[in-house]
Length: 312
Ligand code: MF3
Ligand code: CO
Ligand code: CO
Image (cartoon, rainbow, N blue to C red):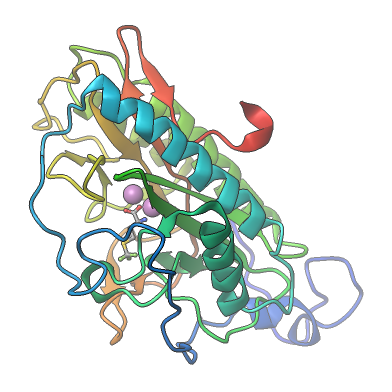
């Protein structure tokens, strides 16, 4: 249980300074900052259909992909993981989320891939940066990261006509033990969800495994946002609940490709959206973490397409 510190108490980090002069700043609610103008992507890089008008067009909406598409998605997944790793290396106190977005954007262009979020349904940036109580879809802006924050960076790339989608949550400087525990539990829950993937088993198995692990620890599982089918389209109609939903009885089939991306909360799993129409925050402003991988169902389980460079 978190003990609530008062301003003049010594900080939890052991610095000997008063809490108000130390990590209290990172416990203040995240406020919207200034969003810089949209960056451009060279026309030599193939843009997805929604890049101009914002509206994703129709294409195959099935979650089962042809082997030829899966082969292309392996590359997209690898590229997304590579770009995420580069962005993660920038995380430090004082760095703005805008800077992280710039690193993602440039890394995409260097690789000849399009940052899938840019222009998607009007989304203005090349990745999502979700800090502390921001559940997902945080828009990079001029807010500088604070020592004690946690940040999820969500990178999706479009290359060779297909998308690869991955995210992870990182500590900024020194974080409180309960924030680290939340991150560790969320990472573990993501892998438990992925390991629950078995052909001919219901999709509900994934959330059963995730919720069965985190809920007894007192955490919440966000219900409104889930995993999604992915392929030539960023989001197909297939929805993957991360909580236990017995009605999610669609059977997993070999060559289905989708994301597992649980958002786990320290308190309420309910959300509110900022006036920017994107940023989703917990209603109680308690922290939340998320990890995401794009996976393909195999004959025996799941193949993860977005493994980070060091763990392939
Ligand atoms: N990458 C996010 C996901 O995991 C989607 C971001 S859509 C955006 O599905 F428009 F917010 F960028
Ligand atoms: Co996703
Ligand atoms: Co994502």
